[in-house]
Length: 98
Image (cartoon, rainbow, N blue to C red; front, side, top):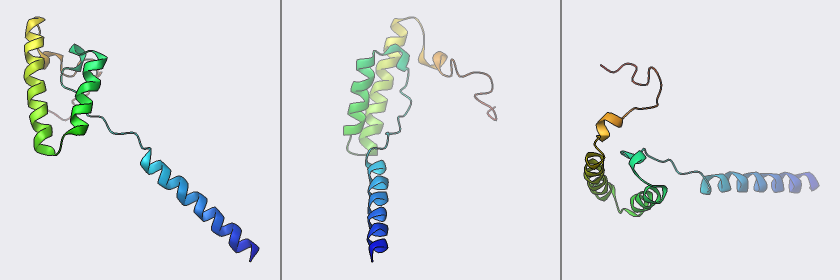
């Protein structure tokens, strides 16, 4: 009986650890369009808006608004976000793409 109790306790402890990992998992972050033209605070505010979005349609609207704003900002800096895409990714980052 004593072994059964210790075994049950071990199972409970392990299942609690697995559950805790699921709740504390690091959120997967998407790449932010033209993020290098944003401050840290602006990137965090954008991520907060995306987390608060109520569905895929609202997220798509937020992305479109953000993209338009970043295009204006890049133009004001005399560059473009399209030119910046892929910088720093090293050789072969688009392997298999035409």
